[in-house]
Length: 214
Image 1 (cartoon, rainbow, N blue to C red):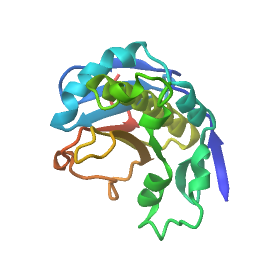
Image 2: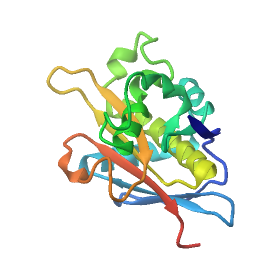
Image 3: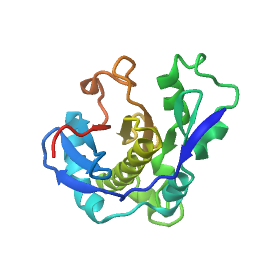
Image 4: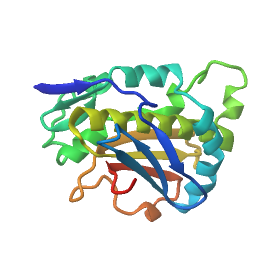
């Protein structure tokens, strides 16, 4: 049974601390007495894409379909942190059937960014735009803003740190280009992925944790 829920927001108590081409970037949020920081890490193929997305992150806001997913908030159910908008994905799944709470959360809390960004599949120029670096940067931007909102809500709801993962697939081998977002509760002994370097496609990780500086 659900025990607690919270609405999400992308900008509350938020301040960009630093960013560059380096592997890590920090984003801090929370009231002054309870500050969290988000640490970004990425593989080599993500670095140029993350740099391309940064101006969009600084000036952007969530597209309507993604904002609608976020507005429904988060909920803790059976010890797992879940998107309320995706509870329908549970169906016959269970924590045990998906290998534990991290596997369960990762399965439920997955969104196809490429299908949710504004005007997807609705304009004559869209097919030519899909698969370009600009398209990938736009998907990544939306994922980063969504990740910040999820991390903020998770901190408000239960003081929980989260692991957010985004990947971009440009569509090799005749596959359609796609961009995926998912998040899980951060558990040091049960990580969603251990080695970023093992991925060929661009992958970005955002991990929230209580700040130890300021």
